[in-house]
Length: 128
Image 1 (cartoon, rainbow, N blue to C red):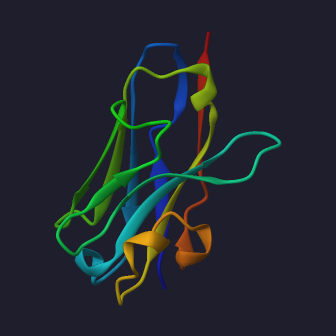
Image 2 (spheres, rainbow, N blue to C red):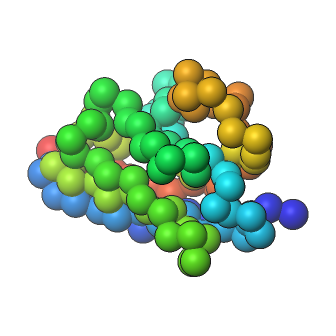
């Protein structure tokens, strides 16, 4: 059974930084596509970033490009989301997600339905 556990959320002022972590129990972690999504109150869950194991492709939503960096540690079976220059609009619950192999086309990496497993989420609140 796959478990994803996010941590690192909290309250930060605009312009500040946070680093989210997602620890997994995935045996073949290095073959999974891992993603971060977020959901603000009253809004749909939206794509933030993802790493595909093939070629190490990392893609980002336009709203976070240049401010957020996603990385992974295959040995620790953990993914990270470094969030810099945070804005009040980044306030949301952040979710880690895992997509089991085989790897999907790049065009599907941003879709919620592409992911098989989800964490419970961690709250990020950015004050103005």
